[in-house]
Length: 223
Image (cartoon, rainbow, N blue to C red; front, top):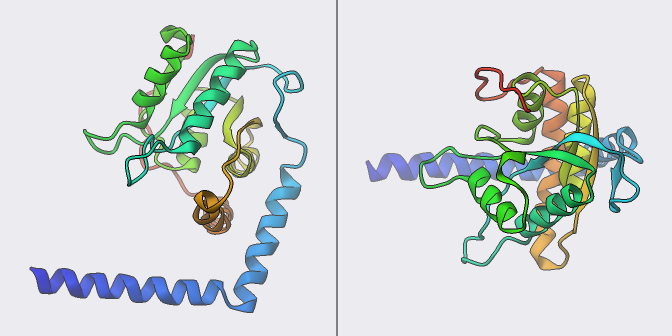
């Protein structure tokens, strides 16, 4: 069993090595930069930092992430998204918060953790709706449209994430704007920023090949 695992792990590492080698080649970098520029142009002037400037939407789509890092520290991306969602709700720029995140394991539940922290900040429980199958940004956007019946909403996350979500929504016929949570700077954010280039490439491929969420389900009315 251990030998099989080691062989499988070696194959995965080899594939990962060649994938990064391709992406970091001059041609690969050129493609990544072009895709990044394309998504930026498609979402220009559609994200906001100030609650006074952003338009009202009935529902804010809060994109999930882990609350804690591997070392046990609070994940600043999580913390700043909670604060942004609370600020937007308190400014009456959204009436409901739809939290979409990963609940793929019994011991891992992003939406519930967000909900508890928002309630602690004073957001009424009845104004919070949970989507437990937001395993990716694409899943969150498409489920907001198909399961929760939303043709327009405000995405709540960091700016780079909002741009990708808005891009996906736009290509699926949904009107979306973004409210930007505080960004994370320094070494803390380098890995996330590098991964975003790959995530944007995947977003374009998802649109090209009409990718679908991992799970659908019965329609849910937000009221």
